[in-house]
Image (tube, rainbow, N blue to C red; front, top):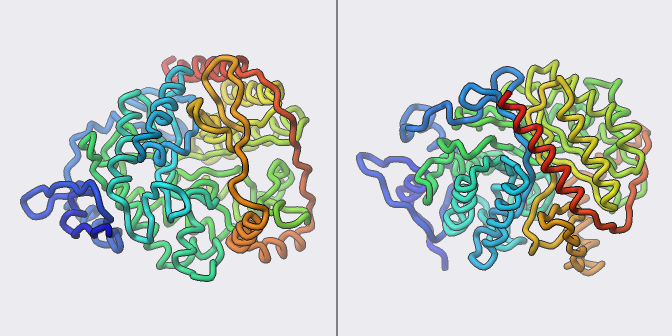
Length: 485
């Protein structure tokens, strides 16, 4: 049976001094973090935290609508690799981590966005297997190793703290812990006990002392930014008020315990009712409901309101996720949508990062879309600070979503893995996801708004990786070097 680490040992794990002595870090066992956001967060705010010796110029900071490093404009070309934490936690799969960093480096990429959470027990090596309990081994062998490797390769990290989607737990797991019968996503944003658990987790990560680098995460310039949630949504609420309130509270809390790092949230770019004239530009999003119903979906019912969301005071950067799925999309629609995002970002006076984007096969169309997206980001006068393509991965990692980028020239993409669930099991999962995503309220919203859902395209596989890699390398060479001019 795993043992619980004492409060004193927990303080040491987070890098705090207890009395006059620094306690040793625990490297195994289960750490209870319940209530630490109240206790340790207050200690931090009252000046009792460990003193930072890091030069503030080592951090990427926001200066108006620019990012800067060492008082110079900072721009980046990067990629996503969500699996780093999980694979770093197991010695037998650590090569997948180094492969990803090596691939990024070979392509000239300087930033990787990765998950810094793994909640519940549905996935191997969970960091938070139970509510308010962290696995010390996954912290040290997984998270600490991932950050130390990024530091060694000279790559900065964007660390995502939770996820709207059920992969690796995320919001759905927090809600499930609080509701034995399921619950809906709105509870994640509004239930005070759930938010206390989220804040406990955030506090434990940000104020942790890395066992390999010796730095508090708060003090590590390897970290570019904290992503408070990946694609947060609140289906059924076209007012956008509930999600907006949560963004304000969560971003403010993270800033209060870590003034060194940038804070933002990964957004799909969905416009809301504060900009009704822009709602037609949401039509590249098909919604989350196609597994459950053929009823047309209206993205305004997702609870997002882009103009309001990016104006949140403690959100440092606007963000955008782009996944064009309809063949003529990038020639007839993409440029208008992206230019609108540019305009809103410029009006908000903040830098923009496109922190997820890609197209599925055939690769000829993928490459056409990538070239257009990179071109838009490079050739605008709007404050675009960086991009992260989805996603780089080890040649040994299966192409689960059809978006993997493998670095071997002319590589043949690995085939889609065989589904791990039976049809009956998947039906149960779909039903649980529909409940969590508040399907009934979203359906009511859709019927009330009475809009149409676009068709979703799919294509056969065609090879052409050499061109894909050339596009990414060229984009990195042009965009990264522009920060030095």
